[in-house]
Image (cartoon, rainbow, N blue to C red; front, side, top):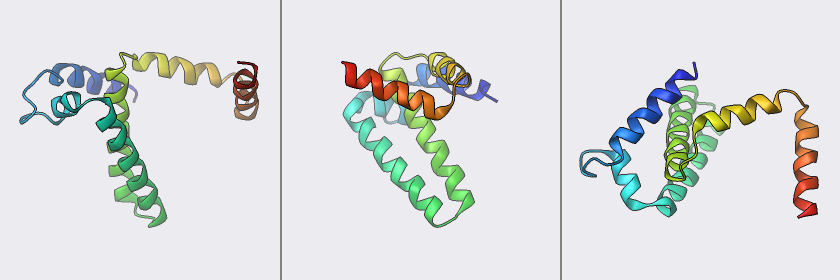
Length: 110
C-alpha cells in the first residue's frame, strides 16, 4: 500500500518543474512553502469538517488532499518519505504514551 506514496512522490518530483498553468504541483512549488502551509491548514480543517459531518466520501477525499499537500511540503524541504516511514516503524517498538513522554522530556532539556 505504501508504494502509492513512492509513485506520487515520483510524480511530484517530475511535475514540480512544469508550467504552473498546467500543473497544480508546479503551481504550489512556485508559490512557495508559506502558501503550501496555508493549504495544509485549509485541508486539515476541511478534513475535520468532513469527520464532523460523518461524510465518509468527503473524509476519504480530504484525507487524500491532506496527504498530497504533506508530500508537497516534504519535497519542498527535501525530506524523503522513507524517513517518515522509518520513524513510524521505530515508534512501533514503544508505546505511544512513552514516545510522547520521551519527546516532552527532550523538549524540556533543550
